[in-house]
Image 1 (cartoon, rainbow, N blue to C red):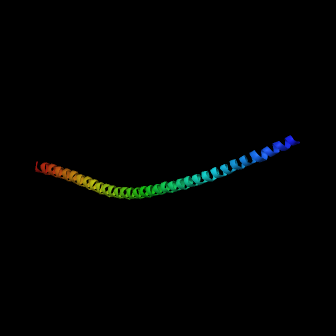
Image 2 (cartoon, rainbow, N blue to C red):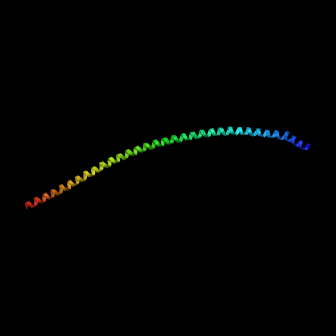
Image 3 (cartoon, one colour):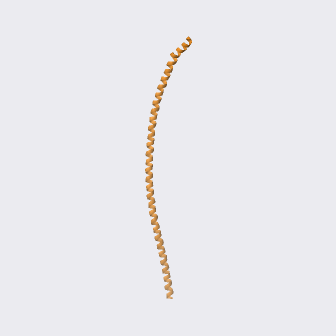
Length: 120
């Protein structure tokens, strides 16, 4: 049994302290990595918030610009509608004047024809 006790003694004397040292190193490495990843996570969250803020700002500006353009287009449409109505009225008046001139010319021609037939 001396051999078993010797092996057991070697394990206790050599392996147990080595395993504790390895465990301690792993724990310290784990703490360092957690600290680094925590800092990176904080930095990434900060960057994401900054990007979200920029997008929100751009979205607000584009919405404002869109509304401005929409109002201008509506104003232009109203101007075109007024101009269209004015042109339709002008065309109607010119057509009426033309019909009046045509009818007057016809009456004058008939009047001359009647005068010439009565004089003869």
